[in-house]
Length: 345
Image (cartoon, rainbow, N blue to C red; front, side, top):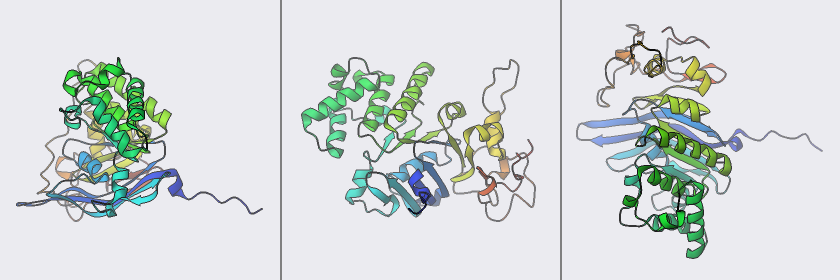
């Protein structure tokens, strides 16, 4: 018998994004909202995509499902889904009317939107919306879809699931609506779940419940998760890997514990210093300046105007630095990051 051959890396990966570029074409010029990012998500893994508002996180996640509206357009890159149920699909290459795109959306890949009232139709009951998702992706009867929907509402911890099934979104609290959105995202057992700021509009107690629920259901279903957030506390609790994004580009990526303990990029360091501390009397640090306009991205490293470590003549000219490997599990886009060591704070 011949020796066993190791499985190709793609079998351990659910999603590969390569050089993704999404631009918005306006009268003032092209806004490079996502400007050449690459990352991969392993099966069963949670990857957190973090950064300040306006850095391109949500545009990235909408791009993955081809939900970008005019004047935006994906202008380059590859979004390769390695589906156990449907084989390899390059989502970026699919036409708008391709049946595989409809199978991907809500079936193979689902999304939890950050604002449930925007994600739910106000003129249809919760049950109608969940049932529609089931019937679109599963070959079951309307009666079976009703039972599946009620069962999923119970599993996401919604009390009185049968009664809630027939209610409208405005009749539910914010926490209840978010549970409904999670139920809709998971009811077809997706292979990849995209969670876009899933707890932003909720109070702290409900936030903890929702995050715990997502982790529990992830283990049960076995799906991978792409978590979009600006909250590094959530990242520490939920993620296996973290990718830091600034002005449409990735600046650092690695295992969450390594990145949070030893950040290599000055921007990551600044984000970590901005986390409120329990130390009484400590002044809350902040990153100086503001995120530049996408119409006026600085030359060189886009972060250099705000970077306390920037060196004239090195960081402020030429093309932006590329992501490079500086340790077996770490990549960073900074010319100041020494191999395996954080840049000096």
